[in-house]
Image 1 (cartoon, one colour):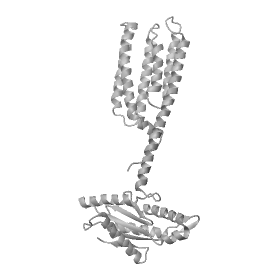
Image 2 (cartoon, rainbow, N blue to C red):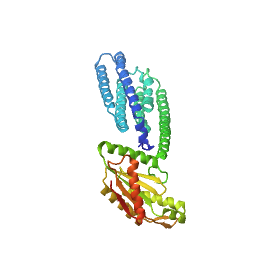
Image 3 (cartoon, helix red, strand yellow):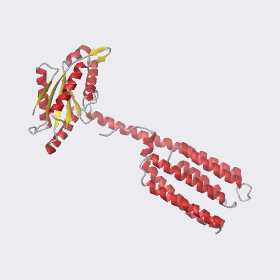
Image 4 (tube, rainbow, N blue to C red):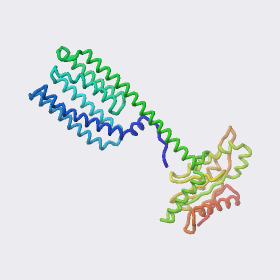
Length: 369
């Protein structure tokens, strides 16, 4: 049976996990390609000195760690794992950019054009909480602006004010888009959840009793036939219990149908208190209920029925400050080889129920196969 979907922040992130992992892989691969391509840029501006080889080594370390991240992305199972990995890799990216910008020559002003795009990349492309991404992107902005301030006296660099404006605009634009994208994801997921839960609600209403939540007659018989087929295949015995409230019509006539509905709801909850998770409860009509107890012998089913009978006898339900009380008659049987169908076994339990009625009500009657 399908479960209703809950709308939570974690559910939203988990829903988009597969898509986010694919985007992260693409982003890391693109970053690796640019990292290696910029070795040529380093060679042009740094020559073949020690600083060049140090920069190449840093790029290779970043590349190796990025490849490791790609490997771990294949094993990601939850959005929390993915988020931690993305943040870790993003920190590496920021540190790489800081090192490269700090060690490049003053006349190499490429970072003033490209690095604001990295700010946008962190805020928009990679998944995760907007607040955490904003902190990371903000750190990159501060580091790069500090480097730009250090080089501001060079005749080859753009003015520090222009660089600052570019970074601030990139940060603000990226933050606005990130917030919008986050809101869109939540709205999209909420619409899907609403549609799915509505469909499940309609499906549930087709096979459950709207008052008590028990299976309706059609679904109860369907499940019973499935268990009966299993019994015929591997002799997996199950028991049947039929229950009918005594003098329920009198209660309805005296207190009204609303009071009767309240008592039926109370009685269905009482039944569930004495059944197991795998047991099947159905409301077959009016005040008549039935139970299927899988993998259960007649003696155990009789004990369950007696507990329900005693609890109903002691039960006092209240409606509009008026006490409602009645008893229940119960018939019990178990499926046997002579049964040709589930309905035949259920009829035997029904006959036992009416035998209990004839013998004075408020009792359990067994019908042995």
